[in-house]
Every structure is written in C-alpha cells, then in structure tokens.
Length: 338
Image 1 (tube, helix red, strand yellow):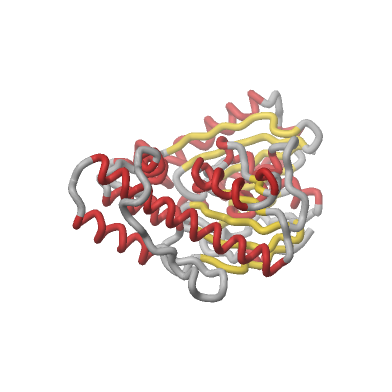
Image 2: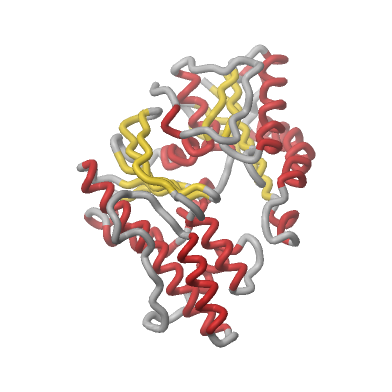
C-alpha cells in the first residue's frame, strides 16, 4: 500500500510518499522560518498564505521523486489537528479535493500522534510497545503512556508554557534570533557550570504535569541582573537548558516507575536537542538502549510522520469523510485504537 501525506499544522509545509513495504519514498519540506523571523514568532495569516503558495509544487515534486502517480496511491493523509486553524484548512482542503478527485480514502491524522510515531520511520531501531512518550513540540509538552497505536493515556502535560516555548522565549530575552531554541542550545554549549542555579519546576510536587512559565520568568530576572556579555549569556543559557532537561528527566523517570515500563520515546522539535539526548541516554536504561527518538530530519514538523501514521490508520480502515472538519484543539487520548 502507498499513501501521500500532508503536514500543514503551523509554519512548515511537509509532503511525503510512504509505502508500507518499501518505506519512505520521498519527503519534501519547506520551512517558513525566514518569513516569520522579522516578527519574532509565527504570524498565523502569513503562515496560511505561504502554505497555499507552496503545497501544490511540493506535492508535484514529492510524487515525481517517488515515481508515483495518482493510480499508485491507496490513500491520502493530512494533519487534521491540533494546530493553527488557517494552516490546517489549507492542507485539509487540498487533501479532500485530491481524495475526492482521485477517489481515494482520506485519513485525518493527529499531529502529536505523527510525532509520537516518527521514530518508527527508522526501521533499524524502532521501539516496541508499551513505552512512555515524551512529546516536546512547539506549544506542546506531554508525557504519554503508549500501549499501542491509538492506545494513549496522557499522564502529564504543560499547564502553561511548553518546553519549546520556554526555549524560544528565553532565547529572545538573550537577544537571539527566531527560532531561538536551537540557537540557545548552541550558546549553552559555550557555557560553564556552577555560575547559576535554576529551579526545577514542579519536581517537588507529586504528579507528572509540567510548567515552564516560571522558569522563563526566572531566566528573565537573571538576565536583567547579569552583565551583558556573551560568556555571561552562555552561562545563563547553560543553566536554563540544564534546568529544562533535568525537569523532563525527573518527570519521565517518575512516569517509568509509575507504569513499570523501561522504554522512553522522545519526539517533537525539542527532541533534536543534543544535550537532552545525551542526558536521557546516560540516565535511562543500559547504554541508552531504552531511549528512542526520530532522526534529526523528522524531529520538527514533516510530512513523513503524517504519512506513516496515516498508513497505520489506513490499514485499520479508519477513514474520514470528505466533509470532515479540522480540529485546532484535539486531545491525543481521544483517538480510537487500531
């Protein structure tokens, strides 16, 4: 079976063709980073308009690279939610139109399920169920009990700023460009330990919910009181990153103990953070063998993860109607199991 997948939930247009026997056949991605950089964050209306401009050429290129025609496809998958409603509507409209015109089944995919299953694209190192998933993507941070595809229980989630938001906002306070998360991590690599001690929010309370708004405020106050030189900023970035990673580690170890599981999947944009990966590999399981994450190409939003998740739903014959509505807010644990 072969499927065409669309991702348009925010500021990246991702198109992919996936075959259940041959794997990923093509993958096209256009990032709007330069478009939004001048505004210091994503402008929803501009994001939607850029998806409109880019989606058709990317579809054509993906199909050509995969040597695939409409007749070769068994279905079309698209991101139904959560995300920016305008951006979601672009992908939804094109997916529904092509599915109707080509008489193909239509599969609406949950954006976070796409991230959760993205490590499955690496066929040489895929996690077995069950596992704990740490999803850290943009405005989302959550810890999920994953018993199987569609069998999700959210154990904890961000009650204010997500980890990715806190990275970007703290980077902005440090004078770094947008998107700030990767730049902050790069600056932190130049930092020295022992200069600043940041709190580990909510780790002294029971439960698995996450909160990074207070940590961002702590960073803002620290930056305001500190010297305005690069090494001082690097030391602050180091302490901030340590606090975020340590907090996520504490919560995930707590989730492993609560569930009795041994495996952790880390997915979403923040999973590309090298320090996060190193700490989790060192602290969970023997030699990092119980920690899984996508390849760097599939950490941020991409069409490949939507195509893969869509294929699993397609095989289970879980289709959408052509009049299905997008879901800007869509709980992950409301999905049906396979």
